[in-house]
Image 1 (cartoon, helix red, strand yellow):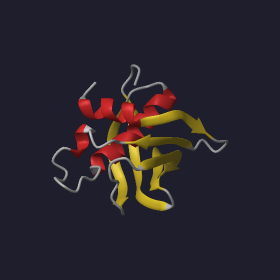
Image 2 (cartoon, helix red, strand yellow):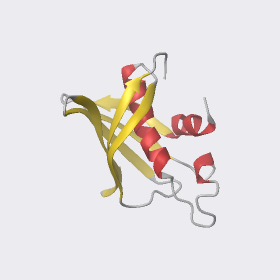
Image 3 (cartoon, one colour):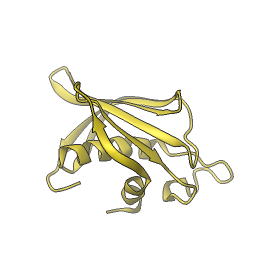
Image 4 (tube, helix red, strand yellow):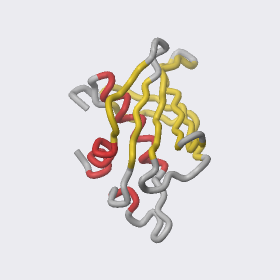
Length: 128
């Protein structure tokens, strides 16, 4: 497992929850020591967009029991930065669009939306 994926796993707070609609949720807290903050940006660290995407990929993989590969980012908006030690809620649900299974995700810190995305994933086999 690479350092970013390991860091995402270590940042996870509590278990994955799901509702009747199939919406997955998990809270994360990336400390100042998280490797993704290194160089992004000195003196004003923010969580890189790819880490936000990979948190969704990791969440889906854990819930499905199958390691996921990012196939496509259909849409993404990164609206507000995520800083070290902020509690980030990652919420996503499966959605069929044009015959493809996609994951519609929203990330928030408190009541502030930090990112929204629509991504396509594929199971690569094996455990996440």
